[in-house]
Image (cartoon, rainbow, N blue to C red; front, side, top):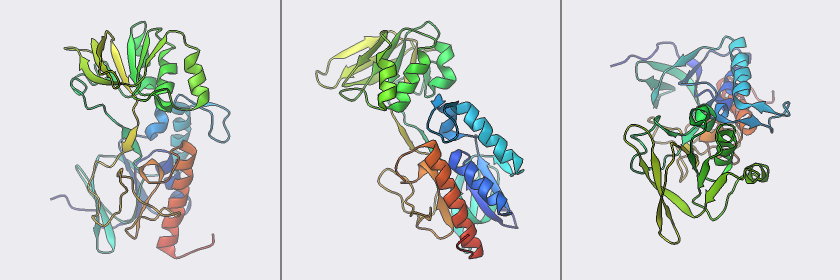
Length: 312
């Protein structure tokens, strides 16, 4: 059995996206003893192409914004350990956060683990993941230079994927479950200007083909039930996100119908001492700037919980 740390931290932040990083900076400024547990830095923000709605920047690439977040985090010498979380448990007046190799005791927890890409759950997808199937166009678009590629989805992330892929190839097919493209008008306008993008509305991917790499996809029209094939070398899946909670949580913790953590306006969950912020919660409008603001709120709520000080 893995033994937990003897002296508890004041707070442990789970996740290091915009919410987690902001929470950590706020708590560090309050001189609290904190720990950040995460597998990566930046979360979904690093997958954004051109961010045009983060105050202070007319436009900044997602990766550059995350670099600046990390720079700010490091300026406070905040302890960050890259380990996979397996459980957050309530034990009397403390919490125990377990990873695959360690366990840490803490007085409070902020869960800011964000969201992760949703998969299609079709034959061939898992087998060819990383071999032509990807969930990150900004990461992998250069691999599809001058080859035909398909994008599954129609929202903002799918539209951004199309615009990113268009820098490398002029053979792009869009498999869209909805009757028409959705997402922000400015992104739709950008995609509509690309004459080489062919959109198949009311369609869904039913199979990914290939032995060692993606060689094609099969898709079905949901109205006519007609099944068609496309000879593509890649498939970018952009069909939305789901809460990134692949670890055990206290049974008392209330989640909504799509497994987001239910929080009040001050980021309190249903478990005293356990707070949540960012895309993993039921707060509307999943935006980088909103996640950062929620991270600040969660940190201030932790400080109030630990010290009883209000009105700061």
